[in-house]
Image 1 (cartoon, each protein chain N blue to C red):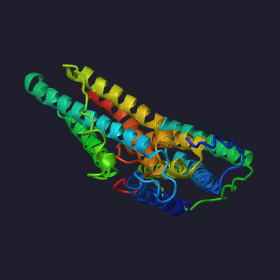
Image 2 (cartoon, chains in turn brown, blue):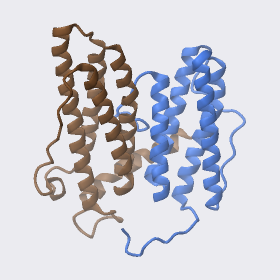
Image 3 (cartoon, each protein chain N blue to C red):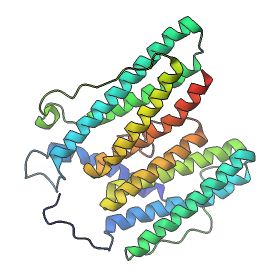
Image 4 (cartoon, each protein chain N blue to C red):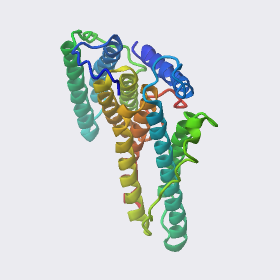
Length: 178
Length: 152
């Protein structure tokens, strides 16, 4: 019974965002776009954060491939990480789709901030722990921004924050199997 | 920030009320469903189901309180709920638990989108907690917990 209206809300809210983003330049926007430039800034930061997560996974996966050749660590951890990486790539696509390509807001002051990835630990187990900490930090960061962006973008941030939180126990379990 | 400043009214907006009611309905359905889930599980899984059942009861009470404080009244729980499928085995029970948590996640995301500012953070936190429970029961993760397939 309750699934229907809820789903409608989710869909309606998602559909509303392009209007908000498209309208954020002028004051004749439909409705009342809440703090559009700040929202776009937070969106761009979220995109950069996802790019960093993707880069971290790619580095750790490369590390595990090397390590397997060297020390014979099994493939289960790699399969797990590959699955989690795919979810981050989905996050990245969804976030990018909220920017209107070519709009002044999308362009901002230049290209998107480049992802920053600090050194990934060289050994497999610490590297996987590192990913777990990065996931928790990314999840917390998105959660803290829910009040800083328009409601429909907040909904996406909250869902991605939840997804990243679910990766933490998966990574902890994967580290144990190494 | 609105230049008008905060008009701190204790009354809830209509959108907040309907989002809170949807979350309450999902919590009540989950509390009912976990009774069924727990009866088909044993050992640590049964303990988890009991803990989650208590969590959903408490969450329903909290939402009820928020509605009451805002001048509305929560819709009472149903006597029984139609389950999405038959539950005869432990595997079906854990699948039901995951589905219940999906519905709770989705309802709280509704609160994120439609609730007033103070309710949006609650919605996001509870959506994350429910997604964690869903992933634990299901043993797999998804890219967009609580959102329709595709996530956008």
